[in-house]
Image (tube, rainbow, N blue to C red):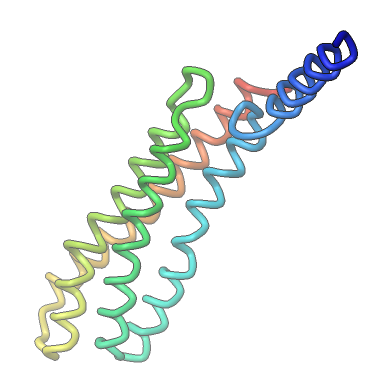
Length: 157
């Protein structure tokens, strides 16, 4: 009886200790989980650039649609990760960036694709759309980099 009790206690202790090092309790793991989600947008950005440069607007629209769905999933993943021990600054910066991407994917890219597809010359509108898109990319990058650096500084082991 005592042997079973000790074995049970040791099993609980091992499971408790092993679970402490997993998930988002470790700042490096939390950071990596978020960065992995963000990096998923890179393939969509590259595919969009390739389609637009090739003037393949059907492909650009397909990429845009897939990217929009992926962003919804990515936003949910980051929301599900939650904050890190009460610190939501990194999570918030990433969610702001992903929502910025979502805005350009649902608002600016459709207009840009349609404008280029119609071969209508409207340099002012095209320039404004490209500026919005580039500002969103820059804002996402700067915001996440800053938040990541601050997070790392606050949560060094």
